[in-house]
Length: 120
Image (cartoon, rainbow, N blue to C red; front, side, top):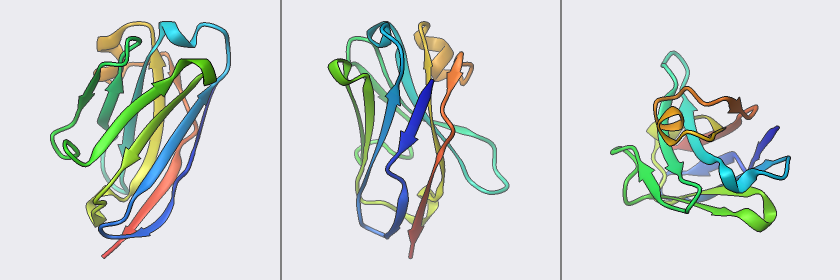
C-alpha cells in the first residue's frame, strides 16, 4: 500500500516536498516512481528512483525536481522547486520490482494521489 502526501497550493517559483510512505517489509526491493495527471490530460511520468537510489526524470522537470528514498522509513520523496503553473496536477506514487515497468507507467502498485496547485 502506498500513501502519498505533501501536496498543496503554492505560488509560482515556490517549493513543495511530496512524500510516499509504503507498507511492507520489502520496500528496498522496489523501484519507486512519481507520475502526475493534470485535468484533461493523460497521466505522465515525472521521476523514478531505483532500488539503489538512482534517479531518472522527465525533461519537463529536470533540474527542478529531485527524487530520493529512505529505505529505513519505507518512504520516497519528491522535492519540487521552482514550481510552474504547468506543474499543477494530481501527483501519484508508484512501485514495482521492475524498473522499466515504473518508467513506462505499468507499476504494480499505485498510491491515491495528492493535489499540487501552482498559481501564477
